[in-house]
Image 1 (cartoon, rainbow, N blue to C red):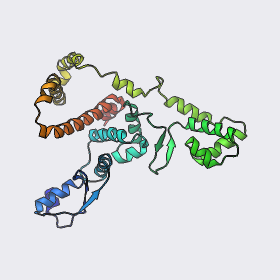
Image 2 (image 1 turned 90 degrees about the horizontal axis):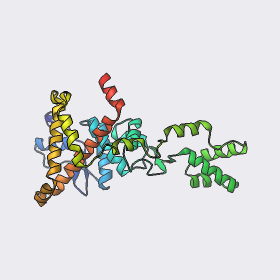
Image 3 (image 1 turned 180 degrees about the vertical axis):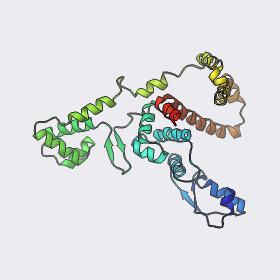
Image 4 (image 1 turned 90 degrees about the vertical axis):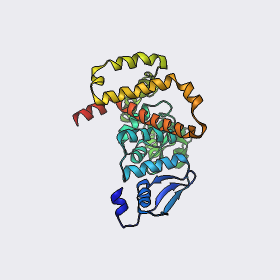
Length: 294
């Protein structure tokens, strides 16, 4: 910050969400300008909604400036999936700074996120069906019902590309299945056996009523690996605060001053998303193994 304020170069414009006047990109430039004694700074306003302002802020921070931590990026991906479930894994990965595979894991690990839409919008802006098998099967039915329909007509109705429709038509003319066997096998491997995202079972199954969490917390407090490590003690202190807040939640709700309720709510939601991202990472055994190897 000090080096930035001492430089003589003119700062690029900062980005500000016009509706809320929050800085989307350029907080450090703004503070450096204040240290210089400047009374104004160049601004580019963003007129979209809060959700898109958040996406723009995450994208900016993953490309330059102070990089986001992994927990922040995980929490951001969860939040973006809530805003835009129709975005492809690669599109969300590009914004959040995660891998497409990790975004796919997060999508499966959160109820109400996976399988919400039948199509995914990619980086190129094109919409593609989530289940390519269903798209091909529907195209085959439409071609049989109306053999003279154009490729584009079938493509629009089935939600697939004209090139895929052409391949389906060619396979039908040869008497083949409109869906290649390899694609069917890949789809079967990807589908969760329970009929819902597998990660949803993992995370949902661990949610318990507050009263049932007390024995879990007490057991963790007796665990030497947590009690005698710095990271473990931090976790236990945080859980202790959560337990107190759970017991006193009615008192907290009744006693908080009106003027700070909105800011407290914003902090709670933001920290909840960060914890949710950490929970996703802890549930992913592969990330734990890779971190130990590193």
